[in-house]
Structure formats: structure tokens, C-alpha cells
Length: 210
Image (cartoon, rainbow, N blue to C red; front, side, top):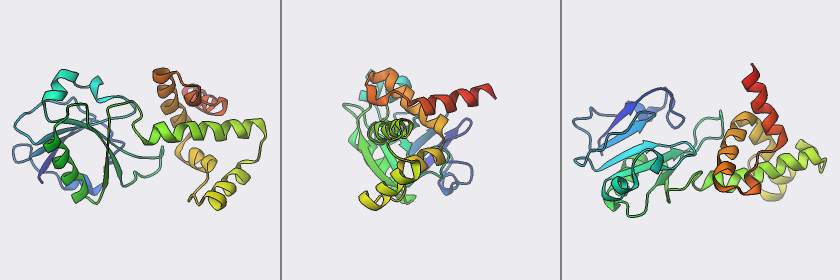
């Protein structure tokens, strides 16, 4: 499946050295258009138009009426803050989305060695909605003195089989980044579990003051 990339600025999903970028074709030859940080242009002649997302909904980029009738999908490659991007693509299919567009998107990403999961058009999608409350809880437990960061991380690695613990994962990815993501979810859903922990808020404020 041939794809073209339209990029403006930095992409969290595909940094400059990512091999996915090298596989792109000219737009005139492509069956799929991939927009990385660039304003998307609907093109009904393509099998799919894919728009890179942050925490936001696809509906913030394209009117819902256009999305339902067209070949437009959103996507986000999961990445833990400043860590390298993972192999997981969350593919956002709005209600009434085009099945052929989903097939085309899968073909493009899976040919690049990535794994695709499909989800509805909601802020945070699957992973951030699941993980951020757990990270916030771990940070609060740390602030409350339940256990040291090392002991909590060791418990999760040995007791639950995780490859790393929640505190080390948040710190490695960046506390300020975690704060930005969970704050966006809290503003959308007003669920207390998404409210940023004080330690994360402090990290974000420190970054702003520099």
C-alpha cells in the first residue's frame, strides 16, 4: 500500500530517523495520505486520510459530518514521554467510519512492523485513559509515604510482572509531560483520577519557569 506524508514540524509518532518516513511515496502516487502535524486536506480519491493526534479527538481537526462520510481516520503511536515510540498504533475510527479506510490504514502501518488497535474517537483513547490514573495513584502514594519509589517499582515488577515500575516509567518519560496529558484528560472528563498529582504539577511549573 503506497502512502504519502505531509509533515509540518515535529511528530511524536515518527521522529526524523524513523524508517517509516523513508517508505513514503509522492502524493500523486499514494493510496493513503498521512498528516503529521500538518493541517489535513480531505481527498475522496484516496483510500484513507490519516491524521496524527495527541490527546485530542479527531473531531477537533475535521467536522464530524465530513468524517462520517469520508475516509478520514486519526492515529497515535504510543510513546511514554521522551522514550522511543512503541510499536503500537491506536487507530481512531469515528462512528460511521469507513471500513475500507481502516483496512488501508492497517495495511500501511502493519507493513512497517507496527501493531494496530482500533478505538473510538475519544480523548486519550485506550492507553492514556487506562494508564494515567494508575500513574497518578502511584505518585500520590509516594507523596503520602506509602512506600519508596524503589519499593513500589520493585513490587510492580516482581509481583505483577511489569517490565518497569510506575514511578521509574513516569520519571523516564518526563513528569511534566505526564502532567500535560493527564491534565488534558481531567479538563475533559472531570474525573478525579485524572487530576495531576502535586509532584507532576510542580515539574510542569519548573519547566515553564526556565
